[in-house]
Amino acid sequence: MTFSLVARCADTGMFGVAISSSSPAVAARCAFTRAGVGAVASQNVTDPALGPLVLTLMQGGLGAGDAIAKMVSEARFAEYRQVLAVDDAGGTAIHSGPNSLGIWTQAQGENVASGGNLLANDGVPQAIVDGYLSATGHIGDRLIAAMRAGLAAGGEAGPVHSAGMQIADRVAWPVADLRCDWTQDCPIEAIATAWDIYKPQLEAYVQRALDPRAAPSYGVPGDD
Image 1 (cartoon, rainbow, N blue to C red):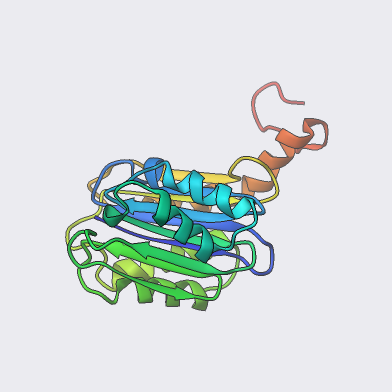
Image 2 (cartoon, rainbow, N blue to C red):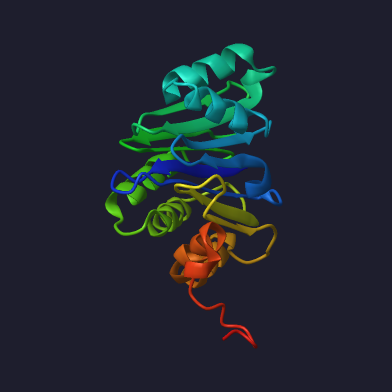
């Protein structure tokens, strides 16, 4: 019921996840990033605990491949899970259990991995990877381009209703965490619209957290 990608920007070291599904609030359960460590998507019959687990394994020194392998060896019901990871060296790994739903497949490239289940066709993840690798600019722009490419290639077998994008960079919290938890329209375009608004303000929000004295004005009544 889901298609997604995890990615690293080789230029900035930022990590990102973008995901969409016919299920509600998919990003709340499935998208995980950690600055300086990596990004993980945990999907299919979802166990949200697997995202933080894989990130912690990578933070402890394992690459994406070894972290995913250890997760599979330790997790209950791994045969139902689909988990994607990218690490701080750009290495990627994917576990797709044999009980993944419908048409399911996966694709990998340098600094990016994509997977999906209940897909319209088995070419969707490769289209997502190609979309990310051919896009330019901020990692957020590239994540949106990749998801649009996946949707154009067929996306899920039915309509998608939720989507999300999370980005990690330098600090302990996601510097962007945009979600559309339910819509009858295209949730990927809802995220794209939110990103267009949020992107120019991203650095200001980080600066306000780190040192509000050096932050730009808040642009609210009474702000001098």
